[in-house]
Amino acid sequence: MSRLLQISAALLCLLMPPLTIQAETVNSAVQQGQDVMRGFTEPPPLDKQDLDAETKQKRQILFLMGSVLLISVFTTVGLGIAMALYNRPVFVAHMVFAGISATLALIHAIVAMVWFYPF
Image (cartoon, rainbow, N blue to C red; front, side):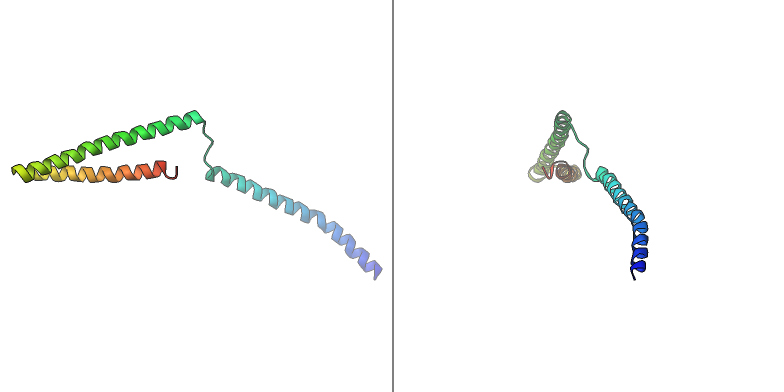
C-alpha cells in the first residue's frame, strides 16, 4: 500500500508542472486578449488642448448649421406669409424651403446628440 502511494505521489509530482505551466499560459493569453480588446473599447487619451480645439470646432459647425437653419425657417415663414396674405404664387418655393428647414433641423439634432451626449 505504501509503495502504491509513493508511486502515485511521484506521478502526481511529475504531472503537476505541465498543468501549472498550462494554467499560466492560459492566464497570460487571456490577459493579452483583454489588453487587445481594451485598445478597441477605451478611447485614446487626448490632451486637454486637443480636446478643447475639437470641441470648439464642433460647436462652430453646429452654430453654422443652426444659422442656416434659422435663415431657412425665416424664409419659409416669409414665403408662407406672402402666399397667404398677398396671394403670391410661391407655393413651390415655400415647400422647398420647408423641406430644407425640416432636413436641417433633423440633421442638427442628430449631430448635436452624437457629439455632445453624454456630456
